[in-house]
Length: 252
Image 1 (tube, rainbow, N blue to C red):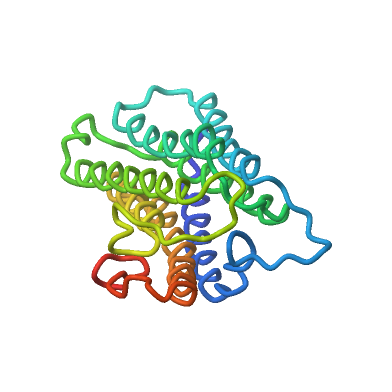
Image 2: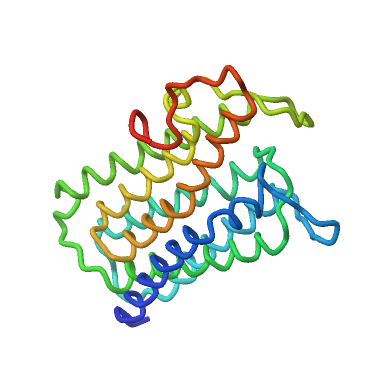
């Protein structure tokens, strides 16, 4: 497959605009799934485990197809960067989806999420495999090193925070509790903070518009959600720690 750089650029700008649209529609988006969800009797839902699996699998399948269409050998830098993107969705598909105890997803939300994952995986994968030109010494570049550290630190925060949330209640319980431990001592949405750090690290490591667009979209999408979570905790628990911020430690 030949590089379609113009297409990658247009789609990247589209992802950024989609993120901005989510900011403008944030209240509607936040109530579409999860704890803020407001379902009608006609809403069709799908188990959370299956929803996360399908969305993650969509990403992995696109990456696999792009790998099969590659005709020229890639540098180690490309594979390292593609591996960073792939390992996140491998975890989401085969580990997180099996462990999650989240509420059922509206079917339409899962479909939209799968469509976005497919689009984004094409943009990231096509750019890295068919368009990007990394020198052999790219892995020694300070951007690659800083980005990798940010990515894996963010991923560790995200996974650890999900572990804390998952163990707040036993299977079948519906009561909400105050999360404690890790970065939850500083922010209400440590899992979202970790994910944002992940994708901005990925953007720095790849130094590309395509990766930056996904980082911006992630911030626009989960940032408002972190605010709603923070407000939910404050309204529900009188003893909620006043020192905690919504998303970024010590800042906001």
